Image 1 (cartoon, rainbow, N blue to C red):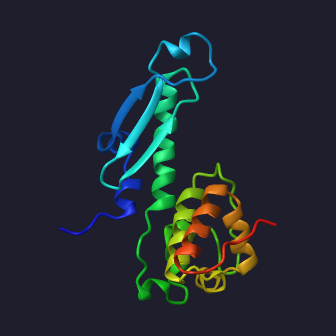
Image 2: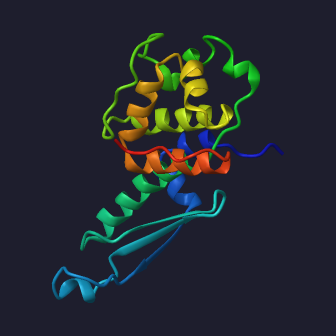
Length: 180
């Protein structure tokens, strides 16, 4: 049996992903009035196949927290589960055929807001390419067909993506990127 990859989980509907997760509810402490300390509205979600755990406890509504936790689980899958890139996938122009890069012509800037639904899949691909390039920014930018400055700007769009890039650079024995 082949090992499951990130796409096997991120391509699932919310209901299908939720079936794979173990969900616990508990009472969160902190501000929120008397009701918060009496209801089990906080949600902890575990995804055993990937080993990821996320929590959501901001709302007094368990349903809202469950929806937040599910969004965070998808984000965590794109952030922390790397897909190995084969040399054939990294050839000139090959990455441009990936659906994550649809709408970005060769040489175009990767510029998306964090709320854009295309952001997290693209962030996952960028981190995959960065890993395949040994966390060297210039090599990853060349493979993606963008400038190094654009790659750095994209990584800075979301602090969690920036953090993962720096963790990866540390694993490859490189210095952390500094925020300007």
